[in-house]
Image (spheres, rainbow, N blue to C red):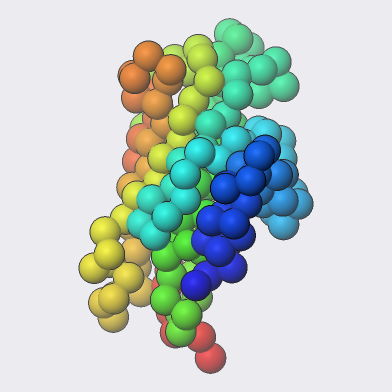
Amino acid sequence: MPAVLDLWQKASRLPQGKRIFSIAFTRKAPYFATIRPRFVEIRPNHAELVIPKRRAVHNHIGTVHAIALCNGLEAAMGALAEATIPPDKRWIPKGMDIAYTAKADSDVTCIAETDPAQWTGDDPDLPVRVRGVRRDGEVVIEGVIRLWVTPKR
């Protein structure tokens, strides 16, 4: 079982375990700490986290900044990739195609999803569907983060 998924499954069963996991995740990739992600769910082919709306991530109009949203989507994608990738493969982000669809004027849940078949083929280009959802259910950002998945040497 991938280390991130194993750690998530163990930690999320404990009191404050999801919070502890979220902090540990940002220790491994410190830039993610800027958004203070709160992981909600991680399983193969799916990851969710919440970006709390707070002043440190605001833009000039008081909504969650577009780059903070992208940071959240990338963190969700990274957790999904680590929880899903076969043990004989490795991944790296290759690109991001994102549309901002509404104002992010509340906490935002960032969701990353793939289909199991995407991880079994020979094509190294793997698109991960991502979206950010406001508290009222409105999608505020959506798109694809492309991964480059290759065999380990």
